[in-house]
Image (cartoon, rainbow, N blue to C red):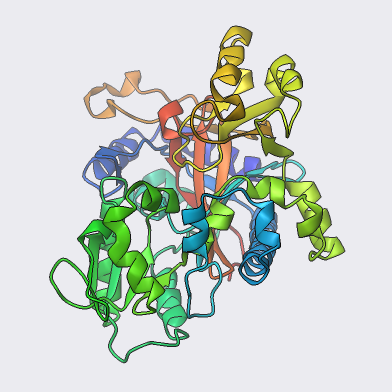
Length: 458
């Protein structure tokens, strides 16, 4: 079987044979500048070279993602059923209140993206973090794929192989409708809303999903959580019309931050007057302390031997950055082995890999964040060295460069693979890369299209 590196080298050779496929790269860059792949008012940085995955990569990712989903659903269910088990988590009382609100439909974790490091030599996997309904990236993948498909290099590669992208839109819309169909208070002609605190959301992506709901015959709006109103019987959007089901794109800590302004949504869920898909119970997997909880005896007591082995093989050692939970002196002294991050933030906010810090700076960070000094809990996690692959850096400025000045030499970038799960079914990959130890947009991170090569996928 050809490796991912074999496919990448073949693709790069095609680009080289086309003298850099400068025309294709300029067209792809122009497409992206006019695209809807916008995050926080900026078009995302991306590579002209897609991530190319073989059958073994697909099988490994699918098995890993779906096994993780089964385990996480067990944890959620135990939390909901067993008050004693809830004590293994350290949650704000308001979070516990939200988590325990009624759900009313079958799916415990409707939408998730589990971020992973795949070693493409031996196909071992380590998790970076778990994400629930606040996950995005679907539109980035779609637009970047659309930008490169017409290029001569992509077409030449596709003539030699069976290629397929990731369909991350219609399958979720259909799954959402199927989940709503299990809601015990469903109505015949439901009206849907996609809700977030819109200054934090990927709004262009929301509108694409809303239009797909409409094409399926379901009225759907995009609105800010703070625009919802509730009169005790009817949850209404800003237009005053009833909303029967919400796709929750807001992360739970944003709800806490906007607690008083979010009471219409909270009270409507409490009164079971709206289906919140997914429920606030998804916060259990979003909060990074889940990595520590998976190793606790209280959790392993209800996992199978196979599931315990899976946790041990895939979850890096994680602990709160407190004197009571971890040897902070050891973390200070061995900075390259650790990464620290907030337990309950998102967007790579305040994430620091020791390998990227001087010893002086690392000591300052430990002093700043250990033992809750920053006002919120931090975790320490064993640092996983990401797998490096060749890629082409972003083509910013290519529209004004002469052909001979365009960079055609690939560079080594770190990889992070976000595996999408739609009600437990592996649906595709958000392929992120970066030249620095932490892979994020703020750290020169980029996105690449995900392409399955010569794969049988379901």
